[in-house]
Length: 152
Image (cartoon, rainbow, N blue to C red; front, side):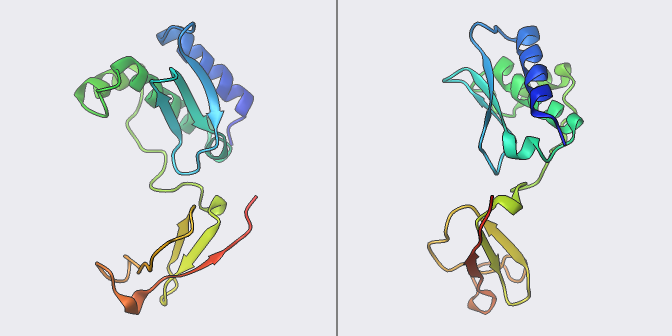
């Protein structure tokens, strides 16, 4: 697990090295389904405190490089060629740190299909959903039942 104080030191160092620290800042956020964010409007790079607590140091460093690359490449670069070039130059390895929601234990809604596949949601599902692992498209035979659980 990454130490949050150390993550802040790394982020501040990357900002001083590659961006203008008078304009750009770093902070932690409460995201549960994404690791990092480059907010061009606020000129702030943020990392999920929940996921930073789960990831190893190298993974968090890659998240920071990913977001600094966004800041350097510009708002319109997305994950296109200009961003990829900048990210590579910074040392970003291009690997995803997670697939989908990485903080399932924080999701208050737990669903299961008749076959027992687990499904997680951060908001209460508003319509019937069926299990995509059991059948393509909606299928009532694979309907997911939801229960609210207590999370920290």
